[in-house]
Amino acid sequence: MTIRAVVKGVGHYLPERIVENSEFEASLDTSDEWIQARSGIKRRHFAAEGERTSDMATNAAQAALADAGLEPDDLDAVIVATSTADFTFPSAATSVQSGLNMTSGFAYDVQAVCAGFVFALSTANAQILSGQAKRVMVIGAESFSRLMDWEDRATCVLFGDGAGAVILQAEQGEGSSDDRGILSVDLNSDGRHRGILYVDGGVSTGQTGYLRMQGKEVFRHAVEKLAQTAEVAMQKAGVSAEDIDWVVPHQANIRIINSTVKKMGVAPEKVVKTVQDHGNTSAASIPLALSVAKANGQIKDNDLIVTEAIGGGLAWGAIVLRW
Ligand code: UT7
Image 1 (cartoon, rainbow, N blue to C red):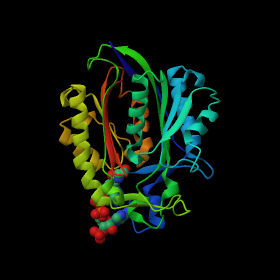
Image 2 (cartoon, protein in one colour):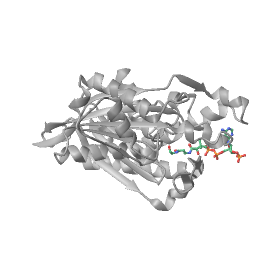
Image 3 (cartoon, rainbow, N blue to C red):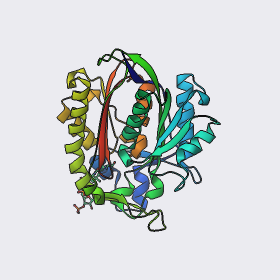
């Protein structure tokens, strides 16, 4: 017998405002055709003025609680994966905790940019396996529209805002890959590459700054590293590509998603794709995709899922779980 961190609920929130590719044509030398062909993105959501990352995270958390049939005080912890917390501190997670009127447990943020949700899920899993917590809310929430340089057509058309949340709960498993819950984790980072995707602001500059990216370089690393980390996670879990029901990748670029899945040897129809509707929502993209895929009937109980992501740092990783 072994403890497993099993998904008990999932939910998401997208801000009301939808921005179609064509909206950028008025202010930038770009086109709907270019954006779709190079990234697969058709539209994205942008947070309203005054709408904060923690507001979106709280909405997603409430949806996940409703899905699980749980109350806020049933949770032992709230972890928010974000690079766009409302303030330098306190954490977005403590804002979510107070937004939920949750008076017990502990709350903190994890920052691994687009890989943030994978890192946060891994942290929650470790706390559940160690007995430190029994039920953990893991949220990915971002307001990347606040980091855009609206004159940089190579970045500002790619990102969007939103939040997704998953509740993990300790349950007994047999210790085999038939168990429900998280079966394996593979995390990596390589700080030598931190200059190819970063924000040129922060505490050291006194300004929030703008996202800067060498897109081609990030693309090259993504294609190589994502398939590799997914492979390692599948090996650790003792499963192979044929066993996989769904790949739920970080939604950055349809070309990265397609070539990663091809390298993994998983059939293209087994991939959850939301990049066309959400753009790149960084740490929010995977929980958003999980929630949408469950809501539309793609993901079902006992499905075997691989989720993988890469982002600034570089930081990347993959998790195998049975839903
Ligand atoms: O989530 C974190 C991880 N991030 C990613 O995974 C993003 C990884 N990178 C990418 O997704 C792709 O590299 C991009 C979508 C950012 C760009 O696609 P690309 O095929 O690598 O294009 P490129 O950067 O090589 O640009 C090709 C051309 C350039 O013009 P020249 O130099 O060939 O004349 C760009 O200036 O496209 C131009 N370009 C644009 N044209 C119209 C760049 N952005 C735009 C634009 N509209 N928005």
